[in-house]
Amino acid sequence: MPDLTPNNPENVSPDNNDSNGNNLKYELITAYIDNRLSDSEKEEVKKSIESDKDLYNRYIFEKLTKETFQKRSVKIQTPVYLYKNIGNEIDEYIKKNSLPKIDSQQITSERFIKQSSIQKSNLRRNLIYLTLGFIVLIAAVFMFYPYMNLNSNPDLRENDLVSVSRSVFDKVKAGQVKLQYQSGNAKELTDSMNKHLDFKVYIPDVKEAELIGGVCNEINGQKLAHFVHKKGAILIYTLEASKKDVMNNIDKIILCDKFKQNVNDGQNWVPCKKENSRTTVIWFKDNVICASVSEMDHDEITSTLANLK
Image (tube, rainbow, N blue to C red; front, side):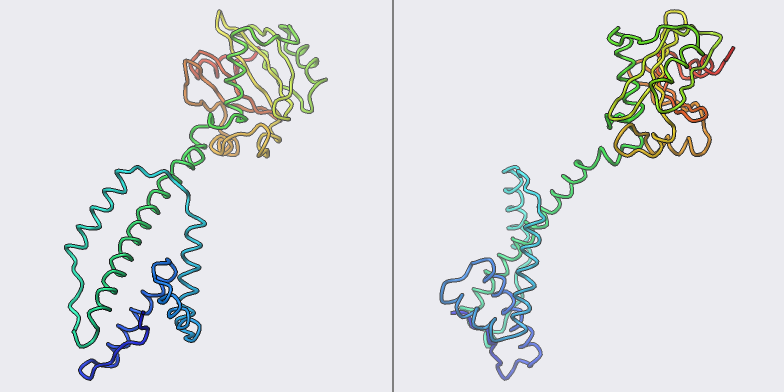
């Protein structure tokens, strides 16, 4: 039967006695919450909690803390070897850190054994909680890693302007995209495409490349223009969208924060990281923003599209 009232031998000061007694009370509350007491012990602890306001507050605090931790913890399949290693480390730690000596007049042998058992159990439990918390933290880092790297790698979002332009370029190169308007006249192609868009398209009339044609469509709820130039045997594909829409969208066709900042700072013809021999250049003109993709270097793409007739 647990004794929640500490002894007070004559040779023990009241302060020390109260401190040790409170520690034992709190440890028995922990054991009570963890369902590690006998029925008679549970009943005794329960009566003490109901009659002692301090014990009641302590009980509520520990119970809510444990329940909150359990609800917020992510279930992770932990390797068996990790549990084994934790157990070994705990046993080694307990051997090296023996409990302090306790005056035989202060506490009975039976209570000392029970207190030692509770302390060991609490130590093991706390170390396991700490280890699981560390595992949860590592899992969270891996879970949110793609979002933390979104600005440096826009390919992680399927509706990013760069990602969409690369995807369409591959289809154009493979002949999977049929050009709706086949025209080498920039003004004529512009007039035809403007009839199907909610923004004014801009098609550069360049000196060093031949305009092949273009097509209009809608991707992810965003109206887009696509047109293709050819320089020798190399294609230069351009995706074009409303600058206002792309700069403000959060769920249609978007632009990563890095390129948004470039546009806001007035930096034009900004290259993306080369991928699988494809180079993408982000540029803007008046009310449109564009992503041009080719197997040329970014300097050649820029000089070709910027060299107007």
